[in-house]
Each structure stands twice: as C-alpha cells, then as structure tokens.
Image (cartoon, rainbow, N blue to C red; front, side):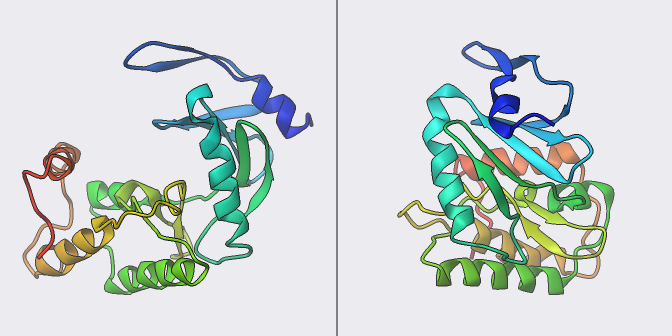
Length: 204
C-alpha cells in the first residue's frame, strides 16, 4: 500500500464559492464524507480514515493532530496514526451518529449522555476545551460504545455551550415518556439552523 502522504497527494478537487468537488483519488481510498474543511476517506482493507484538508484549512491538520496526540489510547476518541502538512490518519469508527439514531428512531439511553459527559471531562483533564459538540460528531458503535469524532475545535479559548444545550434538551424533551423518539431529518436541520442563528434556544 502507498504511504499516507502519497494517498493524500492523490486527492484532487475543484473549488467554487459554495462547494468543493472531488475530482481524483487513489483507488485504495473510499470517499466517506465531506466537511467544511476537509474530505474524509476510508483506506480500503483497513480500519483507518485519511482526512485531507483543503488548502486554506491546512493549519487545522496540525491542530487536530496535536489534539489527538493529547488523547493517546483514549476510549472515547479515535487514535492518531499519522499526520502531515494537509492530512491526518485516524481510526475508522463504525456506527451511527446520534443524528442518525434520532432520524431512524433508535433510542438514545441516558447512560450514553453520561458517557459523553465523562469523555469531555477526561479531555478537559488533558488541558483541552471541548467545543462544537453536536449530534453529527458523536457516534454510537454497534457494540454500544460512544466515540467522539472531529476534535478540531478542542483548543479554542471561547466558551461553547452547545453540548450543555443539547443535554438540557435531552432531559427536558427527549426523556419525556410521550416525546417521539424518531425525529424527521428536516425538523432537526431546521432546529439546528434556528439554533445557530440564535432564534431557538435549547438551553435553560
């Protein structure tokens, strides 16, 4: 298999104001997702993910690598295997995001919320400031374990109440006996957009 640096260099894309389009990649890479700052690929025949950052976000590659290095062998976060100027290599985490669980009606137990709290507490003990925690970057594995992915903002200095607000909504609404456990994607996206614009409040 090619070196991770070579695999990252094989990724070619085109940019416009509103989108980034993948044009080329090595055959050993399976595209699994795109974010604001990077493309993510599973390296075929492995349990690893190669995350390739767009040129203007290359600094995030080093920042994210440093964060993973601060969390070695942490049970709630992927491990880092390699990093370079514009890429990182981490564990592939199988499972469903909490967003997908809500969309499919898969119950989210209170125990999992407590596990997420414990994960964030352990990260803070390493001198990090967990931020930008949302339903799409928390995964429930087939074994029932919690994994938090996308830690790029764990070094920001400003206070982020996003997880506290989600947790408040979980106890105030989701835990109610008659509250629907399956929520349409459109409804969740609308709530998220309104929350981001501070039109809807989830916290106390």
